[in-house]
Image 1 (cartoon, rainbow, N blue to C red):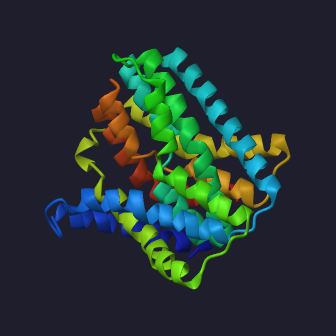
Image 2: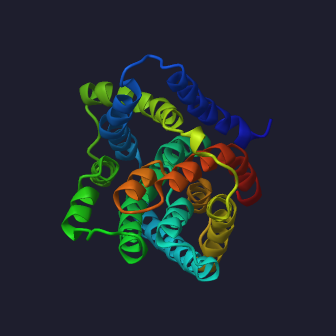
Amino acid sequence: MPVVVQALFPVFVLIMLGHVLRRLNFPGGDFWPEAERFTYYILFPAMLVFKLGQARLPASAYADTALLIVAMLLAMTAVLVAVQLFWRWSGPVFSSVYQGAIRFNSYVGLAAGGMLLGDDGLSLTAIAVAIMVPLLNLLCILMFSLVAGQDKVSVVQVLRAIVTNPLIVGSVLGVFWSWFQIGFHPLLAGILAPLSNLALPMGLMTVGAGLQLSALRGASAPFLVSSGLRLLAFPAMVVGLAWALGMSGLLVQVAVLLAALPTATSAYILARQLGGDAPLMAGIISGQTLLAMVTIPLMLSLFW
């Protein structure tokens, strides 16, 4: 079995386990929504602080990561604008195509980064996530306000959501801890280590529990375009951008991995709140998560 497939196999098994358990209504009640909240607000920030706090990345890694991430997002946005000029979908439909092609599932990314690339890969993935999340939020909010939104979006609300995002807070704290080489007292490490170990499996199972397979109603053009760009074209685009910028090594591996991920489950909430096509968004999320079980190993085998 190829190394990439072997490393990613537990990721997808845990996703499907979460889906099966939710379908069986086990353990019952509101367990899975509350488990997702616990993972988002407690487990993942604890893991980011603990893992990033121990990382010793060169200062240049932060600037190079930011440069490549910005180039990735702007390039994909330009491609999506060109696609919209050709297809001329309605605003709500295009908003879901846009989110499906440009957002990414951070849980799957952090899990795959850690399993495939070790602690250094996980740390660099976390830095990339901390850069991408606010930029993606701003891009998606701007896009909604231009093509789909019925209500005015408050800049203050957007900024508040960014600065209070647990993944960003955890990443910033972890970078601070690493930059000043503070280290972890054994008592603090004894608390953060088990929380960190629990974060990835619980996060992946909550991804599976959130899948809405009933939303898959066939391969519509918006679904196919969004998924093709997200899962196949984006990784290839990143390789080209990295070559043009003279980048190589671990950073490019992380960027290709992030580009190959399925879209974020949070895209559904944004579509529902800001006038997007929520049913289409649900189908894109679920369909991409299933397709990614095949496309991620394929893309990493080609471009790593």
